[in-house]
Amino acid sequence: EAGVVQSPRYKIIEKKQPVAFWCNPISGHNTLYWYLQNLGQGPELLIRYENEEAVDDSQLPKDRFSAERLKGVDSTLKIQPAELGDSAVYLCASSRGDSSYEQYFGPGTRLTVT
Amino acid sequence: DQQVKQNSPSLSVQEGRISILNCDYTNSMFDYFLWYKKYPAEGPTFLISISSIKDKNEDGRFTVFLNKSAKHLSLHIVPSQPGDSAVYFCAARSYSSASKIIFGSGTRLSIRP
Image (cartoon, rainbow over all chains, first blue to last red):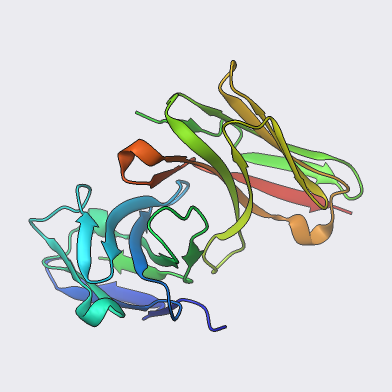
């Protein structure tokens, strides 16, 4: 089966500019996650979707970050405006159910804000 | 507040020997403990898990041990192979917290010939 697809793989933008990341989960996986990974750290959850509903967005900085999952499949994570501290890897993952600990990760998008 | 801690950022082991990666946790509500493996430019991949009611789980060359009284778990890889060189993340799931998985900061394992 095809894995989790993310695009772009790399993105360089100037601060205060907007940026968007796209994720296509594994077919049939109804749970989708967005994680932030800073250098030398483990992934940290930003938001979790069950189908099209965001069921845990407590760690998402809502003043500048937004996310959507149209039709319960693909998802987009947006930052507007980007800050220098947003430079990190943004990982998307999916799983079969909300109680599954076996999550399948995409390769991530490495964002550099200059 | 780091609920899952990996205190060794790196580990170097000779090929064929045992690799032991350690992890400590603070939250008594964790019901599953996990290990994920990550190669450069790839996302983490699930490796092995252990329920909080068990003290050992084995899968081929990989064994995870859980010591609940010490709030400590370890991953043993025997024998270590060059392809095992990667970053290993310890993680834990708290079912009471919306099934959230908390990751440690990772340990970079290098297998030398």
